[in-house]
Image (cartoon, rainbow, N blue to C red):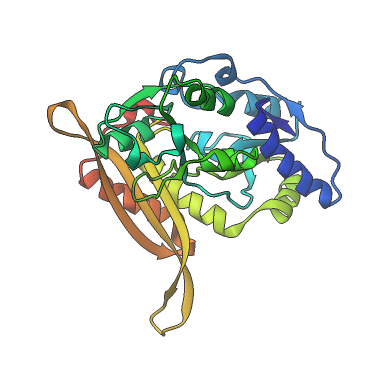
Length: 309
């Protein structure tokens, strides 16, 4: 099983490996260094897929049989010869604030410095109009948190899922409501891939690890991202949830609720966000994402062709 060598990646892969071992499968974890691990440049500069390409190449070369990604890092276009075999149950997808003195986002004074490496978070933070100074940062969880504890920044925004997986949920000063900040498409979800030719292995991974509700939700979110022709580093947020609804006969059924946001050009060079939401049957996840993307484009969502997958 191939994985990046970061603490978070190893922890995520370890949970997948443990689930397979519990099912009687023998697993060896192999660390693979990716271009994204070697650079501290902004993601938008070094390109989409920097954390996934080396893993996929190792898989196709036969050096590993299974690879585990943070799903949000995957390009939206399918990779020939590789199959998404399983999407395990998702962690809490929301963003989290780690701020000095235990402050919440609304309590940070105007002019406070907030670090993030994501264009999506930057755009949404600026659109809130709180007068915060957004600082671009890179590095692992510990490196980013240290910028707050050392006084270099007033706060940083990270994915809650990553903090929870490495046992650091207690340092969160506020879990950000999606009304304030929609997470990245597929944030908090893992993607388990294998070679398309390994049909038996694919079936094993699916039967052992796959979560139907999580797969449907992230399918909707990623379909929206793809229809916007936006990469994983674009200022686009999405969150889908399985909700109960009533059908025409009054019976309770499960449907997918999808919320999406994307950047638009505001006045005087400012960046604003447009939002939309929609509901669809669970088997219409991909179409739901496409339809919501079309609505966002009608509302003026920006041109993300420079980061298209």
